[in-house]
Image 1 (cartoon, one colour):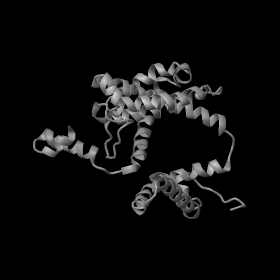
Image 2 (tube, one colour; image 1 turned 120 degrees about the vertical axis):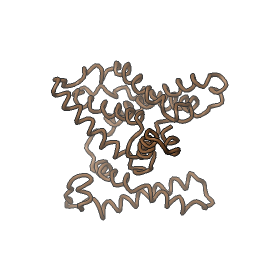
Image 3 (cartoon, one colour; image 1 turned 90 degrees about the vertical axis):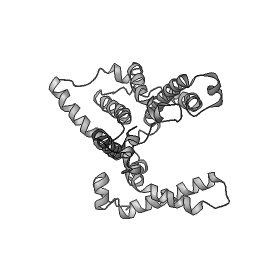
Image 4 (cartoon, helix red, strand yellow; image 1 turned 90 degrees about the horizontal axis):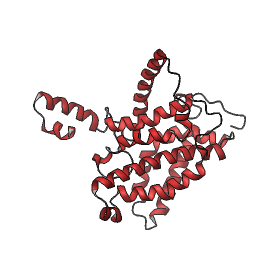
Length: 277
């Protein structure tokens, strides 16, 4: 609506709507929108921290964060913005994307839920590591049940189209997407605690390099797609080859030009070369 109003022009209200619409819809950040969202959320969190200190709020009750009771508030709160995704219709899976200076309100609220849950969890001192402990249930359920059902109800599945009204499909599809998202989050937390909790120099290196790979991967991916577009081979082979080559090039560039340079210090903090190089 803002975009359409901005295109019409004229009038005080239309001019304001055009300004807000331009700030929302103009592609400024492209794939770096995530960093901009983080900057905005940090500002919101700083305001929250000041208010929490004034009122004496140290943390939420642990039961609302680490026990299954968390689903009683997380699922309905996350469902609200999820219902507004894709124009409020059952025509897509997952959240929207906003690349302008001003994020879509429903999308900003959506990501704020995950951001603040992480902050609340950090404060609750889960020494028993209860969160994600049932990963062996939540992950298979998310991948084998919630994901295919979510696609069926959210991307014009033939069976759901014949059996349910558009409004019902939208509600069921959005609910399945929310369940899938949180089950995957808690499941992956449990998996990494179970299998990747020990110190590993290789995993640390991959973690350190991930920021650089995120910043630079897109132009190389686009270039790689253009280069292999007419190769008479399976698209699965193209996909695997392109991702492997681009990742290798970025890791090499990280080692040679980033890790021990001011760029690396800016991105991840200072790194000192080991005796092995």
